[in-house]
Structure formats: C-alpha cells, structure tokens
Amino acid sequence: MIHSTERLIFMNQPYDALLIVSFGGPDRPEDVLPFLENVLRGKPVPRERMLEVAEHYYHFGGKSPINDQVRELISALKTEFQNSGIDLPIYWGNRNWHPMLTETVREMAEQGVQRALAFFTSGYSCYSGCRQYRENIIAAREAVGAQAPLIEKTRMFYNHPLFIEANAERLRTAMSPWSDEERQQAHLTFTAHSIPMSMADRSNYTLQLTETCRLIANALGFEKDRWSLVYQSRSGRPQDPWLEPDILDHLKSLHERNIRNVAVAPVGFLSDHMEVLYDLDEEASLLAKQLGLNFVRSGTVGTHPQFIAMIRELVEERIGRRSCRQAIGHFGPSHDVCPPHCCEYPTGRPTTAANISNRDGSNGSTARQI
Ligand SMILES: CC1=C(CCC(=O)O)c2cc3nc(cc4[nH]c(cc5[nH]c(cc1n2)c(C)c5CCC(=O)O)c(CCC(=O)O)c4C)C(CCC(=O)O)=C3C
Ligand SMILES: [Fe+2]
Image (cartoon, rainbow, N blue to C red; front, side):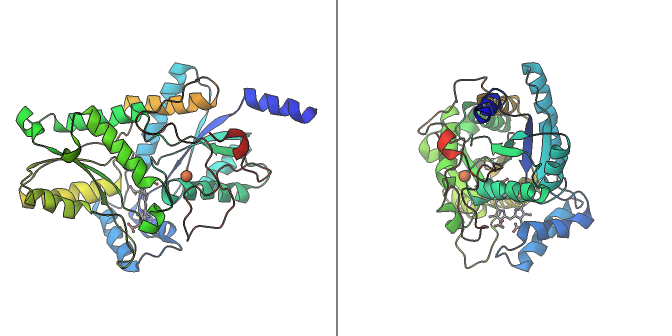
C-alpha cells in the first residue's frame, strides 16, 4: 500500500529539475586535443582527421562557441519558466567537455534532486543524437551511485510546429537582403551532420530530417524541386560509407544546373557552433564564392523565442500542464520513452533498453510508451 501512495506522489510531482545535456566544446587552446580525444575514444576515426579538426578549433582561437550558446539557452529558458510559473531549477552537463555530465549529476544528487527531465541539444534520432546521450546519462548515474536522480528525456521535436516556425523565420531573415526575383530563383539547401550509413540505417535520422526540411520549405512556399537535404562534417574512415551528398559536391552541382542563389540552412544543428562556423561559413562559403554563387547561410534556432517556447511546451507536457503534444506533418509526436532498440549502433556500449535510467534498472517503457 505504501508503495502505491509513493507512486501517486510521483505522478503529481513528476520532476524536480530540468537537465540540459549537450555535446561540449573546448574553452581554450589547451583543451582542444583532450576534448577531441574524448569525442573520438573508441571510434573508428583516423588520427589525421582528428588533427585536421583541431586546426579548425585553433583557427577560432581554440575556443568553441558551443558552451556560451548553451549558457544563453539556459538563461532564455529561465526567463521563459519564470514567466510561465514553472518552478524547476535548470542544470547542464556535457558528453565531451566541462561541465561534464557526471559532475553535474553528482551536484544534482548533492542538492537533493530525485527525478529530472533531460533535454538533449540534438534534434534528430540516431546513435550520436539519442542513444549515446542516454548511455552517457547511465554512465554518469552509475558513477554517482545510489543517490543519483532518475533522469528521463523529452521527446524528439523535429516536427514540432514551433521548431518549424523558428527555422522558417531564420531562413526568411537570411534571404531578406535578396530581391523578390532572387528569392524566386533561389534554392534552399538544408544541411545536417553526416553520420555513417550503418548508424543511419538503425534510426529515423534521415526520415525525420527530410520531414523537417519538407515542413520548413512548405512554410516558405518552396516546391519540392527547389530544396535539398545534404550533409556536412563527414568524419570516419574513407572506406566507410557515410550519408551523402556532401555540401561541397552539392554546391558544384547547383552551379552546373545554373542555379545562382543558394540559402543554406543548417537545420541539423541547434546553435551556430564550430561545425557551422567552420564547415559552412569558412569552407562552403569559400567554394560558393569561387563558383560565383550568391550564398547566404541562415542561423540555427539558437535562442529563437519560438524555440524557447517549444522547449517550455515539451516540459509542460511532462509535468501535466498540457494535454496536447503538438506535431505537424506526416508523423505524430515522437515517443517520450525510447523503445528498446531505438538508435542502436554496433560500436555502442551494450546496454538493455537504455532510455530511462530508473533506479531499479527498468526502463518504464510499458507504462509510458506512446
Ligand atoms: C549527428 C551528430 C551531431 C548532431 C547531434 C548532436 O548535437 O549531438 C553532432 C554534433 C556535434 N559534433 C560536434 C563536434 C564533433 N563531432 C565529431 C565527430 C562526429 N560527430 C558525429 C555526429 C554528430 N555530431 C559523428 C558520427 C562523428 C564521428 C565520431 C563518432 O562516431 O562519434 C568530432 C570529432 C572530429 C571529427 O571527426 O569531425 C567533433 C569535434 C559538435 C561540437 C561543435 C563545437 O565544438 O562547437 C556538435 C554539436
Ligand atoms: Fe532514440
């Protein structure tokens, strides 16, 4: 009987904190190599690639913008929560650099947090963007021990109307210096991080991305033949197949098709971090210039008010303050609880249904899966 009373209290007061889980990035030149070693530990990525990417970071003074961008996100969310009467403290932990997830989960435990909702700064399902973060949470909870809070993730939001609106508005702004004629002849190029085909095959990564792009293009009145989804930031070994086409090859083919105006939108990312600043603003924009293309790059959602409102809605859904889980397009709202095989990948750490990290080791999926 006592057991069921406890459960009831849990249902009424489901979470006592929000945890932002992000990738992390170096803050100083000395951090660059240790950070890259964290990212690539156990991954089949050649050392030359690692050293090449280190140069991208050094080019920007050895500091990634991503940590400041997460701070800005948290600060905007705090204001949003205050204005909506949501009384949840916000914590932040990264996969690859400080503040590391384990440090944060330990701090949460010390401050008495028992059950946290986690928002990953990753918009699409795949091992890197979903399951690996869930594994990171499990490892952090294991390191902290019995006092570690339970941690559950918010759902994927690639088809949330506020995410689509925020992205559409960023693109409208990017194209605003163009004349009507230039806009009418423009091509929308959406980009996302390339991932190995073997990773893509075990997830809905390309399906979700394609739907996001279709919805944004639709919102802007661009027909199917006037937008493309392409990939950037390919890593790994040359012999392993990764998602294609690459943005650089795509720009060459647009040039061959006599398309002159290109608006590039990195919808695969949530802030203008290093992959965006280097691979698009340096590399892709240089090639575009050489090809004589009229190139603009739109901003990622960052702290766009509609994106902040969307995160607030995702939290409200889970604290019983919102009955409707918004989603538009061909697919419904994504699951709150990942099914057991969600986003598996051969090189991943063997886990069971590693989505929710309950104290008893169960994943709660029968109770909450939708
Ligand atoms: C799907 C995906 C996202 C989006 C979802 C999400 O955000 O999680 C993402 C984001 C990011 N990727 C980032 C940086 C890097 N990604 C790398 C390597 C890799 N990314 C991969 C995938 C993804 N990556 C993969 C399959 C690899 C190969 C190694 C592996 O199998 O894991 C490497 C190693 C060097 C290289 O090989 O490029 C770096 C430095 C940064 C931080 C930027 C900054 O510092 O500002 C961010 C936000
Ligand atoms: Fe997943």
